[in-house]
Image (cartoon, rainbow, N blue to C red):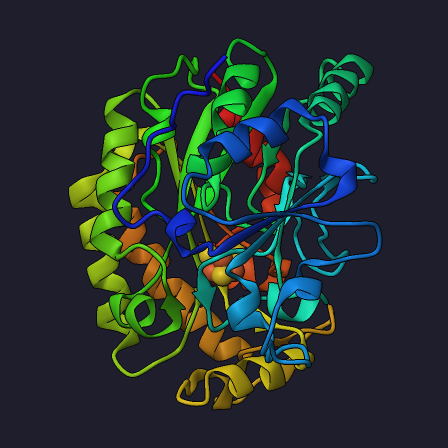
Length: 381
Ligand code: SF4
């Protein structure tokens, strides 16, 4: 049966892909066939045993991370031999939100200067897992084991949830799976505007479509190949008009000249575009990074300045701004958000201590039953 073309978007990150590689383990999966049928115009190579996408590249940089710029244009279809569903890799020292991650693939065709994946991954290409039958079997099993547990599950941890979606169509299967499934909430988190696949689906309010937001100057300078702020908010408004709930993530908050006005402007634009009562949660997290990321990012983006500010080493082994600066930035953003947000929207800090929570909000998550309970309550319906 012919595979219908999926919806595409003007600034679709899929348009950045220059080649698709299929390893032997991906053969025979229905999703592999669907992706290849949709990949009109993108060269496809079937890999032999032991080959990688780099086996077929001429004039390719030999070292990582120099390979990353070109590697982000190569997509490998393969099988996930491990688990799809995992706990979010949080640290004990900071307030964790008990989120679960669906590992649908790795790496991203967009190119944010601060992207942690540059330091996490050691292969330059994009990977997408085609054995989604196993993914759905894991979800069914997890729910059967603990049916009373509220599960907030997201796909945007090791990739962007929607970056490859016009090619893979996975969001359609995920939204359909979560539709009418009590106790489970799916969050699709993106910096793209490519949400057309979501527009004609039944979702029963169980899918939250989320965008990472930043000050306009940071989006323009440091979030390369992503959708503009206006495009992201336009996409959010479209989703809201179709009954989807929304979420926004001010993460990473980056100190820069004019940061106050920059974040104020983004928040003004956010609430002008998106209905406040559709927003389930808004997170805020100041820039934090593995020390190895600085060398990688500054070598790839020598014109970028924000890594040259002063940082301390946090309890999780990541660099972060001094406490006073973090609190100052959080307070301003929280104050601006609180002026416009619906009282039911959960505004929270990502990976911060009780002390910082108290300075910013005047209470700690523990006093409200814990951050997971606060988010479960916001997600409840
Ligand atoms: S959109 Fe997200 S995953 Fe993609 S490069 Fe930017 S930070 Fe990394």
